[in-house]
Structures are given as structure tokens and as C-alpha cells.
Length: 386
Ligand code: PMP
Image (cartoon, rainbow, N blue to C red; front, top):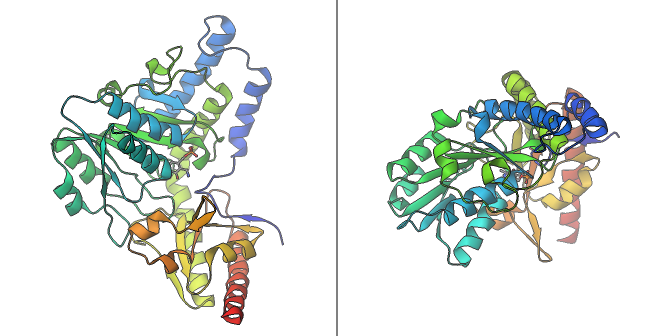
């Protein structure tokens, strides 16, 4: 059986149109983008074009794009940078209970070092931020609210505008980790009211290891850098730019902006065909998260009575993933699923299918066959050892 890749939320495959533009830069591009000689200027022109495409993807301005080594770094910059640039009297940050580890762990680190007080906004059973809870937690001592646009494990979308409005009503900044949604759904930073958004190239079929924090001027002015040096990126992120990576990210952003509406309709159809087939062929199948408000490419599925790690291993060469994180030798269930009120044992049975640009009908059919066999096998082995 040939390999099938259904882990786009983990990392999407590089689009050949992106690779085609990156290769000449890798082969022939010479010079540091901040050098003033002709080689440097050429590199800088290519970076500027990428800035325009990345900004356009989220409705920002090219001059307000800070390139980073990915969304993990962008999230670190947003949280640490805001806390270090703190105006007097503001001591708290709020993050949702379903944030990516790069927001969650940065916030915990800041709290653990006494640099801020962290409060976690609960989510509903559907997996999106509970606005009533936010309302009761937010006050004028809040410096920053950080909530992701779409969750990577469930695909569930958060009410961004309502959250931004509540943050701004008390004078707090609003950071949105838009890593999973920006190239897939229309996104307008100004309309949403985000002060800064985090982006990652490899989720939108660009190269891995490059991303950005895009802000409003007001938002970016409130940040302190976390990487110091030569003062690149308006002093917010020092370090010579990865020109080929940045250009690849720019092309990926341009393609995503042009194609996201049609792509998302096509991918939704494939995802819905996949979930319908899984439900009709396998018993005890449950979709996790509010299916009416989620990304078109994601399905988080619980196969009752079948350990997800075992299912994922048995589905090889079909690549899907579990929400579980392997930490310090023990497998822990996903914090995201637990925050949604899903019991531990059920959380261990959840498998994430994430589709994308290059997913074909045949891929979906193969994945269904593979899941039918894997779940049957894992359930049989569990019964035998019971
Ligand atoms: N935020 C979210 C929501 C993500 O899904 C990811 C990647 N899994 C990241 C941040 C981190 O992105 P990167 O791999 O670019 O550091």
C-alpha cells in the first residue's frame, strides 16, 4: 500500500510551486539581506515582496511583519515581549485552556518566574473559549489576552472579534495565534481587532522553520525584543534573515490567499466523506469538538475502546496523529481534550485526521480502509488481553 499523508496540521507538504521559487535563491542568492551592496539589495527586494504577501494574508501592513523562525518563536515574542514591555499596574495575562504548547509553556514560564500572573480561560464542551468566563475574569489589570484562532487538534474556531472587543474594553492587548487558520480561512487583523498574530509557513505548504508575528503599529510598539543583536526587523528580532525560507513563506502565503476559499470547500468535502465513511464502517465513532465551527480540513475522531497510539501505529503507511504528547517518559492525554471536559480514557482514544491541498479521493478511501482494519485489530487485541 502506498503512503498517505493526513497530518497537515502537524506540517503540510511543501508546494512544488514554492520549491521552484526557493531553489534559485538557495543556488544563486548571495548576500545578507541587510547589506547595502547589490547582492544584499537583491536579497532585500525578495524579502520585501514576501513581506507584502504575508501581510496581505492577514490584512496587515508589510512594514508590520516581523519574520521569525516559526510560530513557536512568534508566540514567545508576543507573550514575553508584551510582559517585558509592561505598562505600570498591569500584571495579569489570560490565555485559553486550549492554546498550543508554545503559548501555554511561555505563559507558565512567565508566571513561574514571577513576571506575570497567569489565568486560564476555560472552554466550552465544544472546545471554544467561554465568553461568559472571559467576561468575569477580565479587568483593567490584564495586560494581554492570547487566544488561538483555530485549534490544531480539533480545528475548532474561537470567537475572535468578541474576545478582542473584551480585551480592548479594558485596555489589554489581544494576541491571536493564527497558525492553523490564516492560510485556510479569510483573516483580517484590523477587522478582528488583533494587536498581533502569529503565523507559520509550514502549515500552509511553505518551508518549515520560518514564520512571523504580524501586528498593528500600536501593538508592535508595546513589545520588547526577546532576541537581541543587530537590530533587524525594527529591532524586534535580530539575526540575519533566512532569505530562501522567507521568500518560500511569501509564495506560500500568496498561493494560500488566492486559493484558500476554493481549497477549503474541496478539502471540506473530502473530510466529510472521510468522517461519513468512518461512521458507517466502524461502530463507536465520535467526532470531538463542535463540528459546526471548525476548520474544513480537520476531524478529531474517537474510536471507542481503541487506544489511539495503537491505532495510529497500525494505520501506517497512512499518517495520522494522536493528540497525546509524550513527556518525561509517560504518555499524557491531550491537555486540549481534557480542557473540553473529555474524560482521560476517552482522550486516549482520539485520532486527528488533517487533510489539505494534495489530499485525493483515493487517499481518503485508503485511509478509511486502513482505519477499519487498524481499529478492528486494536479492539480485538484489547479484548484478548482483557
Ligand atoms: N501554534 C499552533 C496553533 C500550532 O499548531 C503550531 C504547530 N503545531 C505552532 C503554534 C508552532 O508552530 P511552529 O512549528 O512554526 O513553531
